[in-house]
Image (cartoon, rainbow, N blue to C red):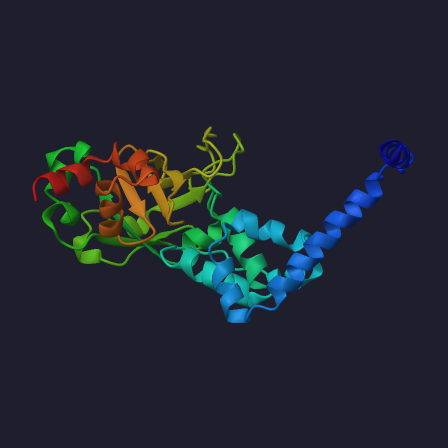
Length: 271
């Protein structure tokens, strides 16, 4: 009889609603957050350092405590320092370190170069070994000497920073950064002899008067450095020696260029 009474009591109990379940879960999360919040801030930051960035970005939805914590620059400062350590060209924009990190990460995947980025510094360059012995004999980089350095001026001209190493009068050359417009012309040519070119967006074309050199494709490496590469030559926005090390180490983003850059292969296999 007692068992029957207990059974009747259980059957008459009201089922737990979905809202109650959600409330209990939130209560449990709040309790966990209260326990975590009692940890020393320095210890908590060390623990958070073990989280992947994707996990860290999901942390604020758990409770207000973590929302405030993850908004702090203290959380993002170590990640910014680690990420930017070996990066060559960093896009720094944002009111917080979190925004700076997110914006820079997205920008680091950009494959096209801006005119400002092209003209703000110098480029180390070398002709490829595949150009033949005539060029190889003139190329300092092939003889373990510092490579030639050039600048792309905002005026559309090219300046040599190592004139004694230049076999050509590059200061008379011009450059145009293509924007994908098939009707874009070489405005340095004679007015009555302007021919349109069809080059992919972001292609850099060098001219000597009316003669166009092989187009330079713009490529981005994992260190966020820039490479300008044609069938004849390669320009590097950071030291060429560092690029060689990336190729030799098998770094994927450098390999896609290094595999068709015989200068790197011939320079290292002979050492």
